[in-house]
Each structure stands twice: as C-alpha cells, then as structure tokens.
Image 1 (cartoon, rainbow, N blue to C red):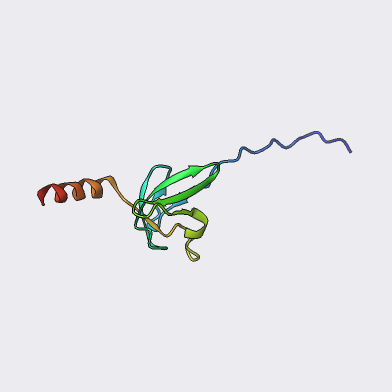
Image 2: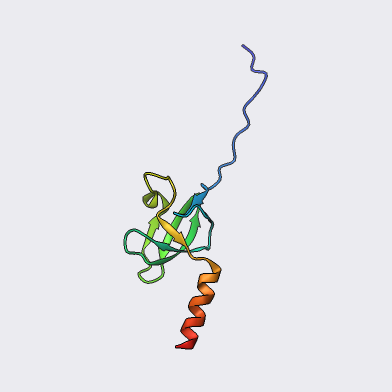
Length: 94
C-alpha cells in the first residue's frame, strides 16, 4: 500500500501544571509545597521536566511526585503577587 498521508512529528512540550486551586504554574513561579516539608519553592524547568526547588533546604523534587491522585493537579499552592506584597509590608512594619 502507498502511504498518501504522512504523520507530522509532534513537538515535545513540557506538561501544563495546575496548582491545588487550579491556577496555572509556569517556570519561575513561587509556590508553597504541601508535601515533603519543602516549604516555599521556585519552579525550574530542565529539559521537558519541571522541578520544585526548596528555598530553605535547596532540595529538588520532580513535579511527578507532587501529583494529587484525585484531581491530577499539583500538591502545591501558588504564591500570588498580592500575597508577596502583603508579606513584604508586614515585614517592614516589624
């Protein structure tokens, strides 16, 4: 048989991550981990895989270990920019 239509190779892209509230997570975002006692983390992309890097311990955990079994979202909570500004203001007051 002659193949008239050839499949185009798909471009590999990193997965789309959602936090526990359904907010989109991207590289460089700050999140608070709900597992492994990581605390506040930054999201890093290496190749096609995301990692959470703890600010306090510098521990690096793959996004695969943070998937919630029920929702399929990540077990992290994204730190919103308004939350950061409130924290900075409270620190300045002290």
